[in-house]
Image (cartoon, rainbow, N blue to C red):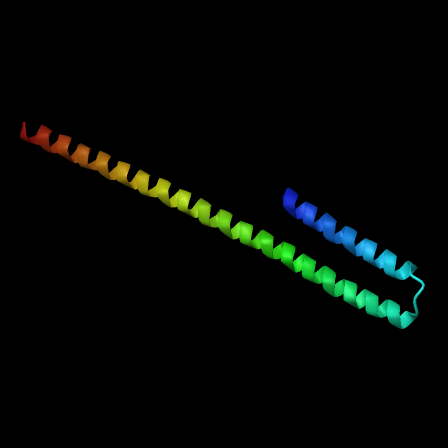
Length: 98
């Protein structure tokens, strides 16, 4: 788990703990308390979904960047290998005709 994921997990856990503690300590009836818990849970789930979506988007961007870098290195290596092969063939051909 990277640092960002740890931070998000901590924030979500802290928010959940604070929400539950606050609602349960409030002097409301059971029905109101249950409604507050349900509302808070929905808000917390929404916040968690947003945070997860952000991390997924960042991971996709990083993957795309890494893929492009790898493609560039692969193509450069392929060009170098082709050039060296051609040079080797040319040298061998000259050596045979000399």
